Length: 287
Image (tube, rainbow, N blue to C red; front, side, top):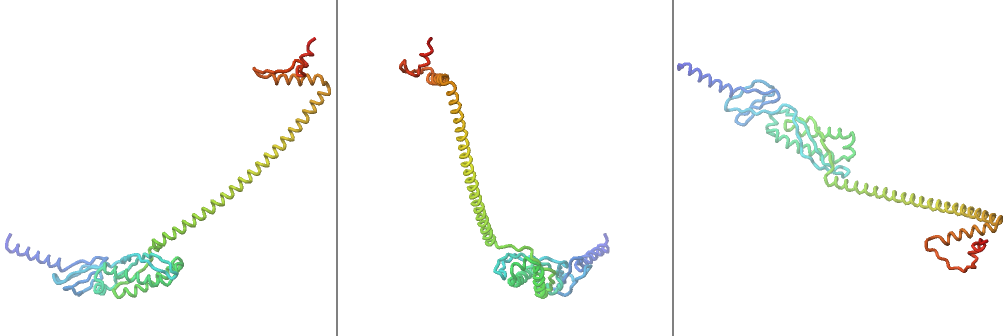
């Protein structure tokens, strides 16, 4: 390689390095701030190919889109002395890059400052409204007022607040446990009342059933005694009719029944006088 070609390549390399250190691209979703020894000198809000002085100037970029700020949850006492843990979120956009850099420097610092502003406004506004307002259609109006107040404060930092919303509103843990304990106590009390009512109804049903059972048994016994009495009456009448028709045969039949009953069994023994009236049919049976 000749000395001229080598010199050309060296010069070309130097030019390429200078161009790479001089030109830079601003993406479509970003905006750039050129700093010279730490001081801002130019702003590039539009995307495209831009320039800077090599070595003396540096480029800091910021997102040109709508950004999110998520403050930590905050416990707030409402106007009716109810406690709520409010978790809010906000969306903001950098509108004045130079002012934003001078006051906040970066997005992390912006989120911290905006979170403090949002929580402060939320405490101030929600502290003057009852819980019923947060749970009603007034919530949108309240949040619009908070968003407007935060936006007025945020303009000092070159930021525009797009929206502030309540992501979640919960009762504090201690309050939740207290409410749960009270609800459990109420449910247990209702269960005890239902159980007592059921036992009372069961006792009433049992007493009524026992009463009906006693009445039914009493009536059955009464009817059975009446039927037994009528049967005995008819039996006595039959016996009387039979005795009146043939007293001798009736006496003989009754004696046979007495013999059968008294001599029933394997070891039946009777000690009677031979001329006893019990054996009178045996005596008369001889020719």
